[in-house]
Image 1 (spheres, rainbow, N blue to C red):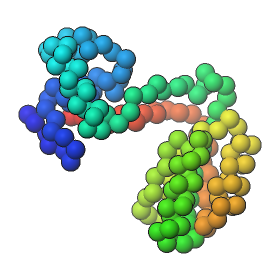
Image 2 (cartoon, rainbow, N blue to C red):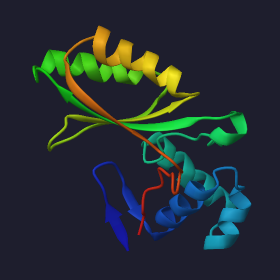
Image 3 (cartoon, rainbow, N blue to C red):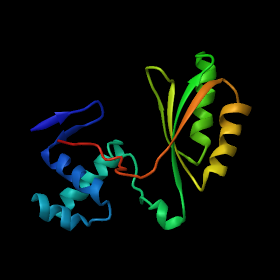
Length: 160
């Protein structure tokens, strides 16, 4: 079966490769080939195509925040004052530049942005609110939710 996406045509082998590398991108081409029944050169070609076509957007290591010392996960709902495109673009850029913002979503509904922060502590988060929400402007209001526990954290995309 072949699935055509907006980016590239994906067959069952591609989907199985994507599922495997989402779990472990350090796995060898040989191991992938053995799991799905392809040769090492075929797996390598497919992975190269998936990366060059941006189906695989990045290869990264996922760090455990607890191993780096105490970390706080904060979810923030932000409502803007003015929805002028220039002002929204400035906000998006500001959020993108902030290294503590792990995820930023421009959303529909009662709020305009949902942000996920990872900070050392609440003092660091408080300082960030002063810069991102007060000093830079265009924020009508924001609501802060502090995560008590990370139950599930993933960026994996279902491929089946």
